[in-house]
Amino acid sequence: MNSKGKYIGVESRVQYDILEAAVYDNLYNGTLDKEKCLSHIKQYTKGVNRAGKILKHVTVLLAKNAALFAILSKQLTANEFTQLNISDRKAIILCLFCKSFPITYDMLIGLAQAFKVQKIVSKEVLVQKIGAIYGSNRAMHIAVTEIIPLLIECGIIVRIKVGIYSFSSKLIITSKFVSELIIYTDIKLSGSKSILIDELNFKPWYSYFELSNLSIANFNQLVSKKDSAVGKGYLTING
Image 1 (tube, rainbow, N blue to C red):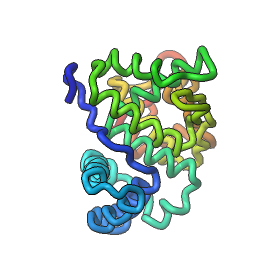
Image 2 (tube, one colour):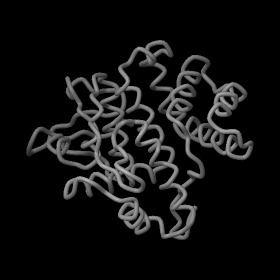
Image 3 (cartoon, rainbow, N blue to C red):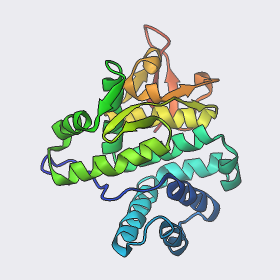
């Protein structure tokens, strides 16, 4: 928690490969092999304390998304997960991480808003935006610093030089379920109950994804289409 009472939770950088391997392990075994995961983590860091923090982050991600994993496991086997294109896999990891640590979602929204008016954004600008939400404190500064490398690994932003970033490219999404997950994540974390279909091309979150072959009428796992008096209707979370 921080001074404004909003959960932050990110204390250490978590490499994309570690998260992807943990998701695969959870799909394959139905649980996380913590010893195996810790061994993987130690390939990236030598510090015992830092390795423990990373394992904690992975454990939190799996625990906070237990309901989502129950649905995900019915849509994808572990092997099918590995056969998804890299953009689909990165989008899954990004959504799960945002759901576990919403400050990541807020960072992405802040960056997207800034990229609309300028091609490059400094870390200072991002810190100001996030500080207005979470409070300007050490925990917030650490989280921003440690999350940025994951966003770079996901390929959606690129570092121009120290502390300066630009938009990289959209993740090309081909899986219908992953498209649903992306929309579900935005509805959930934005605090709204639904989203107009007409808004999918304009809201900041969707500037990171190209939802190709989108068949909204067939959504039924996480979100569903509802008719409305105007436009193409809206999408709302199931349940």
